[in-house]
Image (cartoon, rainbow, N blue to C red; front, side):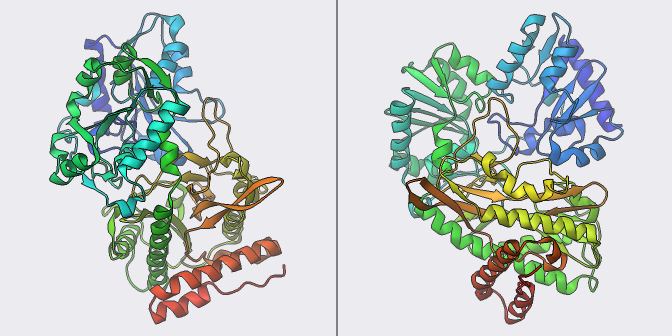
Amino acid sequence: MEIKDRLKRLRKELEKEHIDYYLIPTSDFHNSEYVSDHFKVREYFSGFTGSNGTLLVDKTNAGLWTDGRYFVQAAMELEGSGIELFRMQEKGVPTIKEYLKQNMKDGETLGFDGRVVTASYVLDLKSALKDKNISFRYDKDIAGNLWEDRPDIPASPISALPEDICGRSVEAKLADLREKLSQDMRVESHLLTKLDDLMWLFNIRGKDIECNPVAFSYGYITMTDAYLFVRKQALSDELVRHAKENGIILKDYDETEDFLSNTEVQGSLLLDKKSVNFRLYEIVNERFKITDVPNPSEKLKAVKNTAELKHMRDIYVKDSAALTKFIYWLKKNIGKIPINEYTAAIRLDGLRKEIEGFLDLSFPTIAAYKENAAMMHYEATETSNKELRPEGLFLVDSGGQYMGGTTDVTRTIVLGEVDETVKKHFTAVAIGMLRLSDANFLYGCTGRNLDILARGPLWDMDIDYKCGTGHGIGYILNVHEGPQNIRWRYAKNTDEAVIEPGMVMSNEPGVYKEGSHGIRTENVMVAVNGEKNDDGQFMHFETLTYVPIDLEAIDVSLMQPADIERLNAYHRKVYDKISPYLTDEEREWLKEAVRELPAGK
């Protein structure tokens, strides 16, 4: 009833404001994927806790749109709320734009907080609704202002990273960016609002979003000056010193709008409408000639430099050893001592914290037993969890933030007896992950060219997973970053990034059967150049993750000889890489866990 009461209060306020439909996305002022508690307005009014979803409320109805990762979870969390679930990209399910076009009447008003909706999204809605004479109200945070005891916007002190950790100085990065702006984009200034891009550009990190080492900030870069707008509470002595040493002009975060309204116009302004919030866009659009393209820093950041890759290779081995230690502990103790999803996650988190350079988790650990694993982003809590027993599958998706890299790895662990269907699914997932890892491809490919290698073994069984196969991985930054990704679906108006040497990405096919089981096997890999000849530059992937794949659920009869050799070769590397970090007892167990499988069918 609590959600219904909140929606009732919201509808009363919307009636006072003469707003017919109100949009509440999952976002902050910077279009971040994960948001701090202050910005969880959609969660407050819907009860849905997933990281992606948009709530639309009118006088009598409410709907929530989310993607395939959250269908099962959203259905459970919305039950009894009166909110209808719209499963995005499913047949017959309208998009929000289509829904509004079908349901809004001429002359009605659509409201939202203009600071948490991107310019591209609003402009697209305006275009779609132009024939209906729809009014847009975006000057107030109507829903957020009704939230009692709403958490404050965080503002922790910002720290500077040593140059040997970053691999390139702020001066060098600004020079690279300005070269892109002047020569490739032919603009004179740049409004940068994406938090991980700002952290990368200025070699700084913050703690304003859980698990994402970013700080609320804006950047304005010209050919001569670099402005960084930060919250007053974030102004550490370290940041002030770092800014002075690197020619960064510090400004107050809350003065950003006034600055953009009054600063001298310097030629064309580059911004990414998919990142900049609509309110800031409205300000600069009145004064500047706008060039709308993806932030050049996104691609510069995605291609890891030599120092970054060196640190990542090192930290991934240590992180892999920690997860392997956890698997050993779990296998040894299951059925002997009480273990549940939550305590298992705490155990794994503790092993990561022992690694030198540990800063934080890269996302809250997903520890899901049996049917809970069918919810891709399930999270157990101290008060809501499932006890583990010596039967079935246990999925753990986890990662860490270290002074030297960001990790992300998933393993599905056999705790006891599993049936033949589960083994069939588990084996197909392993085959697909290893085939993609072993890809040899020409430069110019995007992730859409390669996705079939991972998804193919499952499509052969008429099975699919409702998400991409891979995403970019940040460096001491967001666990999800672009522009690179691996997915099969064509998305209109979405750029497909060519895979460049130095791009790091995940490889994580899976099977998710509601009410039964979930399986995911995820490694992280980096694209590297291979042979170059008359046919072009060939490329392949170097694996960074070295954690055993549970052989107890592998059905060798389903594998081709080449697939068996891929698994054996991977396991040989696992032992070589991580055995030095294990105890004698753990090392003996690992020898058996990565034993050679027979090559014949």
